[in-house]
Length: 245
Image (cartoon, rainbow, N blue to C red; front, side):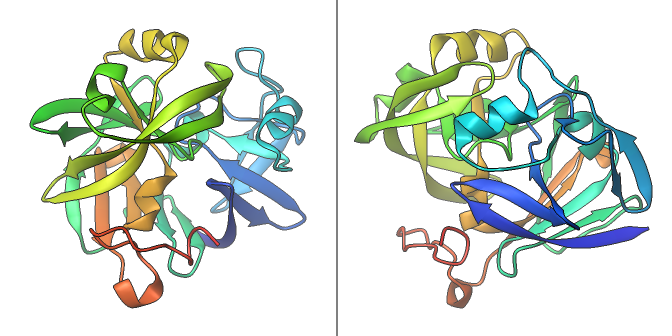
């Protein structure tokens, strides 16, 4: 069974239109929560909790400034193959195998948290694939070697709201080295990730460059390069209006 839904990309967050409700896609969250008792995807119904780690759907909405009725985390998302297509703002959930043409990266799991191994200036780094994170993150030591951008305010459930220094950092995934806006991790977030042997966060900026097939059951993340004519960022950093309008 497959189900394709439209999504809006708001402030770096993927908000899926599901009937009268909006669902926030958050692969970096281990648990799903909401103001609804359940949610149905691809003809399967899943229960929603009311909170995890002190975070509720309402408190999350207040922090990120985006109204949503549920936050879909790994306990639900990891049951599916999911294709996120930023060129048309569609997302497809499949309970069967679902592939796209592209480069296949090995996807690991730490509990419900998915991660890929990237390279930053020749150093291998495990980065969680986190669709709830508009901003990607690395450690201060890795970032300070790169061009500084500005100070930004960001919110992460594990770290709360904080002001973070951001940098322009080339990150290699498979055969492609592309530039990402990367924040310096707050110490509380860095400690939480290092406890599960993860050193960084790869956020939704990935969609500037790629159509993504997320297949945690098969331990695959497939990246298909976006067409430049449809607004994808080139390696030289053109503005992505389609995904970040």
